[in-house]
Image (tube, rainbow, N blue to C red; front, side, top):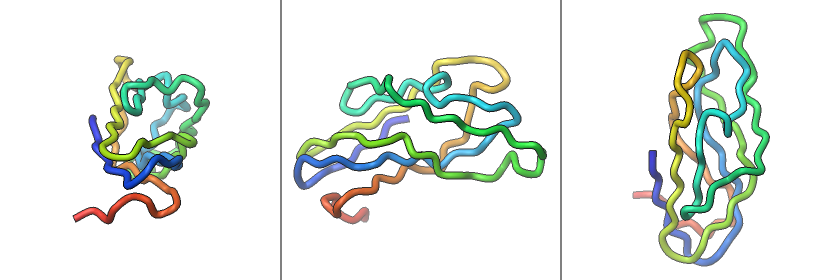
Length: 107
């Protein structure tokens, strides 16, 4: 998955990913390679907790992957699945960038 974000100036924002949870606890960086402007994020320890009920499998939750740096102009955020098997896939609903208002509103 690739997201393109345009920033009005260089800035640091928090990256949140809204995704489902699974029956097994996982670490986001064991499931996805996440790149911001082709720089691989490797220093994040974001644990997605296990759920105990099948009724919760479709529920989405925001997970914060920490701060990222955006440069003035176009920026690319890419998530690539790197594992296979029963717990390899997550349904991604959206990403959210939380910062100081330097991103133009989406159309």
